[in-house]
Amino acid sequence: MKVDYLIIGQGICGTFLSYYLKQQDKTVLVIDELQPFSSTKVASGVINPVTGRRVVTTWMIETLLPFAWESYSSIGKELNETIIEQKNTISFAPSYQMKETYEKRMSEKDSYINSAGDNQQYKTFFNYLFGCYSIEPTYLINLHPLLKGWRKKLFDSDGLLEESFDISMLGVHEDHVTYKNITAQKVIFCNGISTFEYTYWQNLPYVYNKGQALIADIPGLPQTNIYKYGALSAVPWYDGLWWVGSSYENEFETTEPTAVFREGMIKELNSILNIPFTIIDQVASLRPATLERRPFVGLHPQHNSIGIFNGMGTKGCSLAPYFAKQFADHLTHNQPLDALADIKRFNRILMEK
Ligand SMILES: Cc1cc2nc3c(=O)[nH]c(=O)nc-3n(C[C@H](O)[C@H](O)[C@H](O)COP(=O)(O)OP(=O)(O)OC[C@H]3O[C@@H](n4cnc5c(N)ncnc54)[C@H](O)[C@@H]3O)c2cc1C
Image (cartoon, rainbow, N blue to C red; front, top):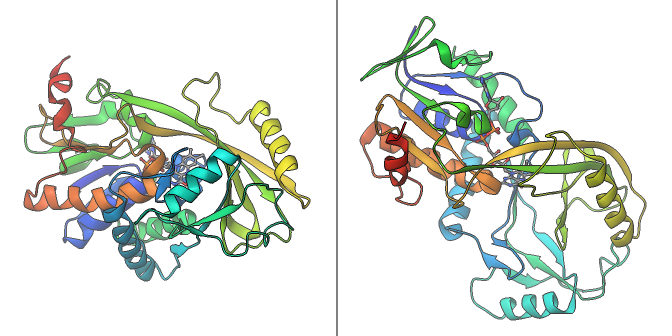
């Protein structure tokens, strides 16, 4: 079998890279093994334009927001599914200092912070003293139907191999690669954290960042919004349930969900919610993150037939579609990559054995 591109992994990165390459009439074969707790499957799917205690705007957000709306709407149309929705975040200031920060940011232009209207209207559900603010727009991505729908499209066009990729079977040549009976011009690694196990990429400054969340039933809480209270987010999940999280752990003893996280979250929910809730499930995954919080996009400096599309960290939903398009344009028309994402910046360490 001959294809233009062999793509390893069908998380958000492999999905969008294969989507944009196919749009450019390239043939792709995606190899993906079904892993129930991949980063994309555990993610809440939020694109929030602001971040941190200072509520600052996130990197490139003016470009990423409209691009995300356009790309998720287009793929959604193709899959006949609603993949992107605007669900603004209602953010409760957890302290007087945070209230001041929100008020200051609200007075600034393009801060994405607005009044949440009647400050009292969420009192039935939440216990808060310092007011609440609306983060607009916030987008919610329905990642499960996206992955499932695109997987079916790939499968129906003979573009999916559902198995575990074995690097020892990869033959790397100057202008092509081989894998079992497959020949491709290039192989692109989109398999999240496992990409960094391969010799080709292990010198990159990556980090595994563990994230955990609870899946909860919170009857009566309107699913019209995402709610944020300090570091805790409650995000509409599937079947009327809520995703409640999350942790950002750079050091951990197990990749599994832990009792410490579960008990801490339950305690916090008990203190902020005025309505009853039930915990249904708990999930955990490792985010493929990078030390300098910028993605890894591009071709290996020593092996032009090998590429990487990875390192999306906490922001896969906003970064992956935009950089997938940029990478597809780079591969097919030699268009430049954003210097801050291009792995060229690590050429020296990638050449070291
Ligand atoms: C708790 C949590 C919450 C998050 N919330 C958000 C959020 O709200 N918004 C946001 O933007 N980001 C969020 N993220 C981050 C986001 O999930 C990641 O940035 C993104 O999903 C990474 O996508 P990926 O395609 O690189 O990797 P993955 O999603 O991990 O995909 C890798 C794919 O490769 C496959 N694979 C791996 N190894 C092999 C192999 N050997 N052979 C074949 N297939 C293989 C896996 O099965 C998987 O399908 C969150 C992450 C976590 C953990």
